[in-house]
Length: 370
Picture 1 (tube, rainbow, N blue to C red):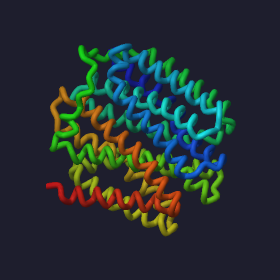
Picture 2: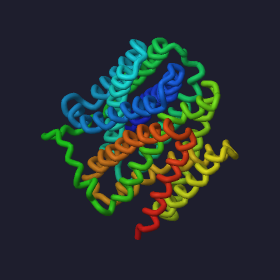
Picture 3: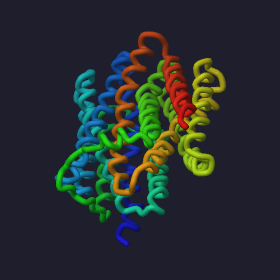
């Protein structure tokens, strides 16, 4: 009974965290563009955030074992708020990379706590539905963050104070839950068997590809539109359209994956993504291209996650969840820096050329899969 009402309370807390993260992820590249940072530097600041995600994913087990789930989540929210306010201390590349690194740690730990609570308390019947509701809440929070961005103060310090208020609300709600995660006798991070497990390999590769695409979108898409001359509100509107397309596509894509098979759905999505990228490269049918891009990119991760989890036993699901987060984070870490460097040296359109190449690789991989 406790967990029945703890779940919506936990999702409410997640909503506040996601709104704050979504607004910050779009605003940071815009601040850096105004300060004449190069695309390479903007990409590296984005990569520092995903480096923090990687570190937080690895250390989350230790934090949960050292404290409990609710206090680990609480401390992560406090670190998020302090690091965001810390951005106002100085506008230089190294300090912003460090603060974004700490924000990345805080976000990764909160995700591990929430997903572990769902996986541990859910049953075989309810776990999939709970994860679907969790992802829908996450993406809705992302959309709300973009929609509310125009009402956030533009000054870095006051922006950070608004984030601190959102984190305070997130802490208040999470302390009302009754989740308790089992403590391990040894706080180890032994997920290599999951990564090397052949039946789940394509699912893990899909998680990595989703990380590459989504990480690059968050780090570089606002800068791309800013360089085209769009205002901050217009950039936010494009991001809202992109993410909202992913939210709307969640249920139909997962229904199709159950009916026609995950391999077939991922294959169709990858082909549609290449088509959307070609429209954006030639700058035609921009709205259609963004809708297709959001609908495909944001549904690759949950379908790949379901593929990987379906290949392991119940007692291995938590370890597989960590393996998926790790591969997703590694993709998010590497891709923004590499793609930003290419864009800086060649052209902004190479953002979508890179996406098309990644999609083509996934198409070939899925076609070779028996």
